[in-house]
Length: 261
Length: 185
Image (cartoon, rainbow over all chains, first blue to last red; front, top):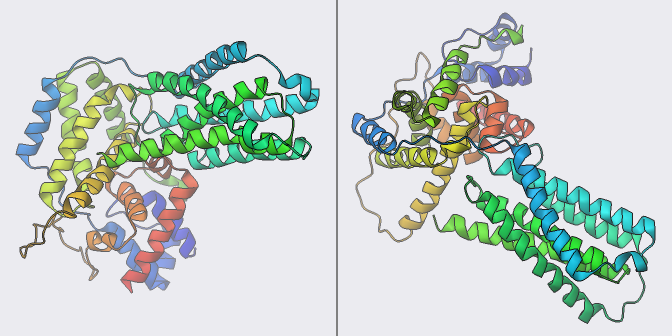
């Protein structure tokens, strides 16, 4: 057994004071002073944990005084479906009011590929968000990585799948297109807030960024259908700017909420 | 050999599940028993990170208020401790932020506050108390070790409580062990 294996053992036995080391570990502990010291340290008590009686009584009074039955929240799967339903509602209304122009200027596979990137991004953001609104639920992927990954995928798809042609209207059409997308991210934000308001958001900045990303993707999807541009600079910059701005807005709003505590 | 670790904490956790379900149904006996069982764990966790006993007591009360408000977010069948510690962890972080903000307006006084922790003794070793050594660790590593040590939670459960991955928790724990080894020399 070596020091690394002692670490592995401590991962499982750190919380069990007074426990004897297994035979293989004992041999190593005999030889290695550093590991022996660490093992002995793990046997120490942390501190006196007696809660003062007055504090305990205050807590019991407060909790028992306002005790009412509650209905347990559904699992992350149900929230995933709720978030996707909110997203689809905004898309359907947005596309219906905006119209569908993109398939006229893009080839079938370009449109399908960009739609697939957006769909994957929406699923990743909604799945991440559904796990962040319930405490103690394991996150499979770091929420920051989801935001960066989705934006990177959108920028890459726009830059690689479409021609880099000179775009004369880039600086006036681009901001107008992005602003229109951001406009549609607002109702999505409102619907997400309605769904999340009764839940416990432990990290407002992190959850705000993910919710902002999902709302921004709703806006980006509306302009994905309605925008009549198929140039790489426009798609990679201005369309991707919608979820980026929205995620940043969500992040800063969440950070502001954290500071208000 | 390594897999033969006795699951001593399991019966306690099973009963916590039942108590939590009773708490959600507004059973006063279950709620009171849950408070009695869990408060010492939470208090130990909160006290190990803050400056004074009074502050730790305030945080414990605030933590229970948050638990009470969010009790509907616990789902039956899920482990209770990660759910509780996820809330306790954020109570502590918010408390730290608030305290830092207040301290920025305060003038230092000569009298030192009462320490939050009172070591029970160092056992048979000549090491500094574990509490003292834990305080030398970065916050994220200390938090992981406290959860492993105070509650006997598994790496998986600590990952759930901290909103992290098992790999990240393991990495933090192993870095903490290495720092403690160096501190013990």
